[in-house]
Length: 95
Image: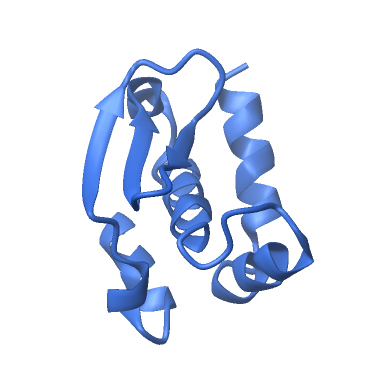
């Protein structure tokens, strides 16, 4: 199901990270580096697939908008309308 993440975007190639890095992160579930590298917290392995899907989709949206401004959230809401529910699920699961 995580592979479906790329199917959400009209131009999947524009939302493809240059690489994937998995490491222990102290305060984040993921991040997108300025060079386009997707970094995921290895603790996500304990999360549900829906929650992991949310983190990946959130970070891929940062390829277009590197900030958390209104345009970022419009894109995230368009490609994943239930993102808030998934985020809450992640926060509850991993608390």
